Structure formats: C-alpha cells, structure tokens
Amino acid sequence: MAHSLGKYADFEGLREQAVALRRAGYSLRQIRDELKIHNNDLLNRLVQGEPPPEWTKRPRAKDDLRERARELRLQGWTYDRIQVELGCSKGSISLWVRDLPRPERRDPIEQAKLAARKRWEHELAIRDEERLKTKRAAQEEIGSLSDRELFMAGVALYWAEGTKDKPHARRERVAFVNSDPHVIQLFLAWLDLLRVERGDVSYRVMIHESADVEGAERYWADLVGADPGTFGKTTLKRHNPKTVRKNTGEAYRGCLVIVVRQSAELYRRIEGWWYGIVGAVTATDLPHRT
Image (cartoon, rainbow, N blue to C red; front, side, top):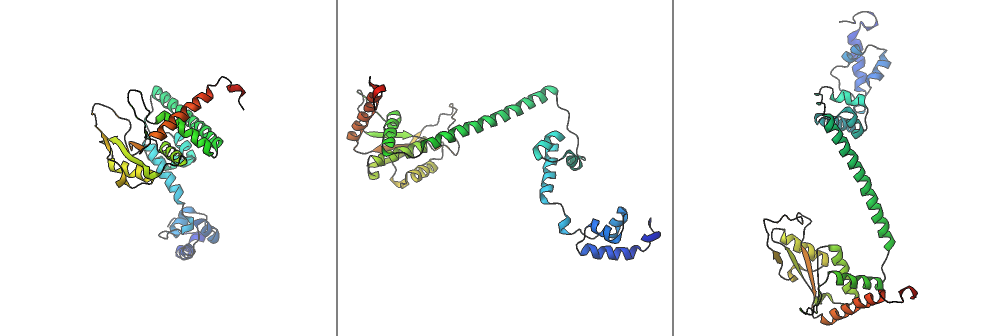
C-alpha cells in the first residue's frame, strides 16, 4: 500500500472507524476532520463501497440542469447560449458537456441571421406584452353595464351582424348568425333584457362537413344552456378540396344561428331603435345637447 508507513499504517483500523462514521451519516469532509486524514486518495479508499448519506447527494434540480445542458450542447448550442438559457456558470457547463463533440462553427451569415431572428423574437415578446397591457386597461375602463348601455350595444350589434329586411326581400324576423361565443353571449343577454322568452328562440349550427360536427353541436348547446336535441338540423357546408381553409382545428366550431320565432314586430322595433340612434348622432344641434 502506498501509505503503509507513519500515522496511516493501521489501514484496517482506520477503515473500521471511517465506515462507522460513514454509516452514521458523516460526509467525507466530516470524516476527514474527525480522523485527521488529509490525503483524499486514502480517504476515498477507506470508505470504498459505502454509499454517501442522502443529505450529501446533489439536488435533483442540478441533475435536471445537467441533462438539459447536454441536450442543448448536442443541438449545437455554445456555452454562452446555454448559460443564458439555464442561468448556470460556464464552469459547470464545461464539466457537464466536455465529453460531447464540439458543435460545428456556424457560417457568419447564418450567425447574423440567427442573431437578428432572436432580436426580432424579443421585440415581438415586448410588443405582445404592451398589446395585452393596453387591452387589460381598456377592459377595466368598461366596468359594469347599465340596462340602457346593454340595450344600445345590442341594437348596434344586431344591425351590424343580424339579418335585415330588404325592399326586394322581406325578412322581418330576428335572426342572428355568428361564430364568436362572446358575441353570442352578449346577444342572448340583450334578448333577455328585451324579455324575449328562451322558449321562443331556436338554434342550429352551420359548419363545414369536414369539421367535428357533433363536437360543435355539443359546444354551442352548452354555451346557450340548451339541449342539443332541441337544435334544428345542422347546415353542412360542402368541402372544396381546392380551397385552403384557415378556420380549422379544435377551435373551429362553425357558426350558431339564432332565430326568434314570430318576431316581425320585434324586428321593426329594432330597425326603429337603430335609426333613432342614427338620428340622434346626426342631429344638427348635437354639440348643444344636454
């Protein structure tokens, strides 16, 4: 043995003491201080085969960082990029990935493009945050709605989105079609304000035949609080393979058609309300109204 002389001559005796301390939960540093052994090679041999106590093991978070650093290195990331991504030191990164092949040097033009793309992504993130802040602030400005405010909003909404009567095609009935669930909810709240009974309201779905028709029917029924069995027959739009549709995926649920039965009189009142609003805002004495 390399250390068979001097105060380390009684190897087996030292080993018994070191093993006992190890099993009692001592760290290598504590064993070293206790037994006054300052040779790391000898210290490791004394406790060989004895697992370290749990409290001395590295936290799992460190292991996760190491694995992530190795994944990024294999993707060709530099130490600098890994450091920014993970927030750890270059020294730790070097220890974790030094056995991996070095990434190929990027073409300067490609590096410039990558840097520009990163700057643009950062700029987009800032713009998105500013956009959300503006929307949140505007939303808070609205607060609660009075009945009159809801009434006026509903009239304008219907005249923008609802079915309208034409001299060449009489359609004096209240019918509303929209794909936005929030718009549908506002319209139904407006009908409630007008004391339209829900029993006088019919629903049906309009959707492309290639979509999830049953899922859309369930979605709209849940939104309006109605039994899907009470819905009218769904209108299926034929799929044209030459057309590139963007309204696809799980979020696509077609449109909901809402019709108020026996609503000619209500339609006439809505038209009158609308032109009342138009007349009010176009009056010549508008600046002097109180």
